[in-house]
Amino acid sequence: MTPNKDLAEGFAQIGALFAGNDGNLDQIYREHRATMPVMQGDICAELGAASFAGDTGRPIYTVFKHADVMMVLRDTRTFTSGILMETGLGQFLDGLMITGLDGDEHRQLRGILQPSFTPAVMEEWREAYIRPLIQRYFIEPLIPLGKAELVSSVGVMFPIHVVYAVLGFQDDDPAALELFASKALKVLGGMANDPEAKRAAFQAFQELYDPTLAAVQARRESGATGADLISRLIRAEFEGRTLTDHQITNFVRMMLPAASETTSRTFAIMLTHLFDHPEVLERLRADRSLMRKVLDESVRYDSVTTFKVRETQTEVTLQGVTIPKGAVISACVASANRDETVFENPDVFDIDRKQMAAFGFGFGAHMCIGIWLAKVEIEEAVGLLLDRLPNLRLDPSYPRPEIRGVSLRGPDALHVIWDVP
Image (cartoon, rainbow, N blue to C red; front, side, top):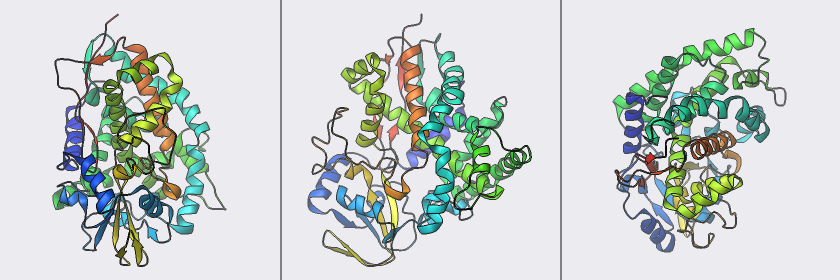
């Protein structure tokens, strides 16, 4: 698929918004774990990056150690997620965002949604949608070129194209697809503390609503018998509860920004690590069963979204620091995933390391519901690149890719070359 210039620029602008002053991040986090594991204040703001903690006027505390991040993400009664309705995508979703819900409301909604995102469903979608789509639209057009920049030509668009397909939208209107993608990126831009960006984000989300609702209503009227996601959500039921067309439409809208950001950047990060570690790349070329290990270690080593935000429901003490009720907690996943008390040689990229809890896709009750979809998408994209582009390697004419960013990470570009058959 030909890169869309506006979409690529929007993707880059989002990256710049969350980039901040990211030099020596590992050292900064290491020092915090050792000397100030709980900090009063927002480390993202200190480092000049847009923060998912937002600007609520409440006190903010940043936590850095693995044990504390795990506690914050596991204890959903003390550390609740409703703050995301104010500072995150929830402000555009009419109060329906699964990551911003807690208690029975969250349990019931997740109970309805989860059966549509099981590994078994993902394997079905892998064969029906994901592999053929990525191969046809993103890999085969590259083969005769011999060179490409993979963030703009593949990474930015393939995840949202996949989501568009699994939702059951018609795959014969590239302009409509790109319009969906560009509006999803505008929504993420609304995370910035900028009134104009917030207005643009709200307008983009509103413009996504009508065509999505129409698709949901049409699917329901036709019986919703298909294997696509909208049909599955229409049929879904848990404890006697089902989803309205309005709720399904909002869930679909929530998926679009996540698809166009997290999966795209994780894909680019994983490829960067493979090129930085040629011995791992060669092992993967020879043995594709290692794909999941490479992906999981890549997510641990460099998580895309590096902070998870919660709100305290009672006064709590962490690492000797008393945090008041109503404070915002910014849990630093990037620091926790490199905690030397949990991970041996944490700054080494090691696909053979003993598996320990890492938080790149969240943890506990709020583990990313789309985790298996994201993993299958990335595995297929990387696998097809290695299969169809012989001797894929970095283009020496360009600087090596660099993973950067404080609150949202990834390389700006990935220039590669390969042998044309």
